[in-house]
Image 1 (cartoon, rainbow, N blue to C red):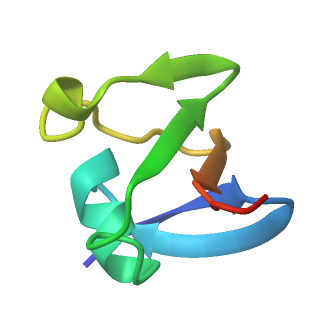
Image 2: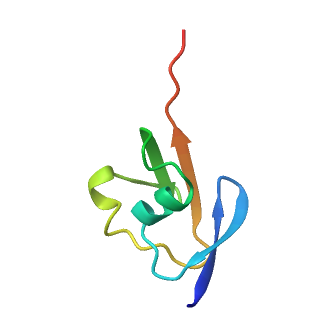
Amino acid sequence: MSTIHITLNGERKEIPAGSTVAELLVIADAGRQPVAVVVNEHIVRPDQRDSCILQDQDQVEILVFAGGG
């Protein structure tokens, strides 16, 4: 299986080639939390996560919503 390298939240990570944003959320154990995802400075909406295929050298940020007060 071939792999690609991305930067996830500032850290280099190797993932399977052809992975989608939705699959990355599972890999990163963030699939059950409300999160925002940014790929190469573009927001990926929840309805786009299954179709957004990550590419080698993509810059990805997963932002977890935190409550507080």
